[in-house]
Image (cartoon, rainbow, N blue to C red):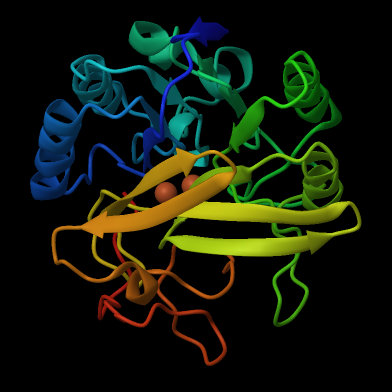
Length: 295
Ligand SMILES: [Fe+2]
Ligand SMILES: [Fe+2]
């Protein structure tokens, strides 16, 4: 899908990058605050990088759709691993997106802003023959082709941001554990096209890192969570300002923690709190004493 927002050139573009709201276990205070920030500051667009719900239940989707449709700005939504039916296997395999009905126009939609496009990349799959569980990312050939075709359709010089649920890091730094399948080749393809940044979620802690690929550097920007499933930072969202060729990220939060203290130094395996030595942790270190519930 494709949403043309404006073709008029203008000054800096302001985006709000939200992720992992996990309706069903949302942080009510945080989402009320974000809703008010959006209404007051009116960003040019809002990118929500997946995990709208906890278990893709109908009531969770109802709450998510209600909250999102009330936002009076252009929105694009990625599908997270928590958003495809978990208990109903028939739906998981044959109609995984049925529960998005009320916001289907926003799901994986491309947003065209002045000289800047936000292009979706699907990393969530219904099943993975390579491993179980299926919660981590997989960029299928089809998903990558779809994304690259969309990028290549833009005139030369258009600034491109790609949105995905999972970070594209293919292997965990400390032990080489497989994270996102085909992540390395995907990052290379995006870097080769001079994509400004890939925006992702899934980790529940923010980051702003640059990966070295065979085709050059690729900026990777992760948003924290707006749920009560925190990893090592309080609930937050990213405010992204794009001015010419520069992209500035601020990890906004209600606790007024400065952005550098919010961001983790490398991409961990998942959203679980760091428990073992060597796992990346934010400087603010808001690690919950018990693992957050998954229900
Ligand atoms: Fe999540
Ligand atoms: Fe996730």
